[in-house]
Image (cartoon, rainbow, N blue to C red; front, side, top):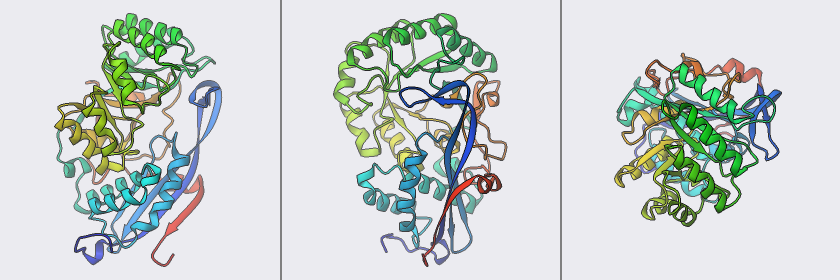
Length: 400
């Protein structure tokens, strides 16, 4: 037994289920680069998955992916790890974190994340408290920015004017921040014009961010668009070009030419891998995501790492676990309401209950989103919907 704790017999993990399902999103398609983007008249089938973990004494933790761009990869990794937590102590999340971290070291450990989040859900439910309280709560209202889907070429976010109109719409709904994901072609002139046009339209009323999503092709492109970020007074410049956000050296070089603070490490997995970005001063903000950085356990380690360096840690993407992490963090500024577009519902699976919503209209008058107050993640999932749309079910028990 790898867990170095004296576990209660009832807290042993006895069953893990993984439910793969699919749902449809209107107005969502793919561009020539393979990115999901807004597309008038298109309908996409989006894969997703949910899982549950049960213990010998009947406690149950649950998780469902909120955003699904990587689900096809994630679910395979989750399947590969699920059997290895059977018999472990569900209360020993730190021990399980370290066990799975080593086992999954060849695969960047993203599959570990879903299991860890479900264990935190179980922990909260077992004591009747929300996860953010177990983590040590800091706030219950999260300042939120609207984060766009990639622009399309078919009637939705297809021009700089359309982006500015949507920014104005978000402002009128109550958002104080707006982040642009541009077009998949990565044309530096088009991207820069879009940034400056939106800044001229709403820059004096909203905090603006830009995420190039590693679409700009060259370092020179990144400098060119970065100068537009400077001119438009953008709050941060994220994943500038096709180094995929993996090169601290390139980021340091870019900082010599661009004044806008850089936000990097979304694509750098786990605690240790992010350290050089801080010690080498290669980024101004650090990024973490409980869905990708080995769960809530991993995300909070990264938040505390950034805090030790006196830096801010920004949570990537929307979802219940993201809200609980941010609620327990001092050094974080914005909740990302991703991914939104005019006339297109947020492409999250329609399974979140308990009043939870990441739709545009859920923003509060204070420009904030709430933190769930119920036990665990504070979200009930529509398991009937999941079962009706299920493509595969994987069950893991000690008996096999």
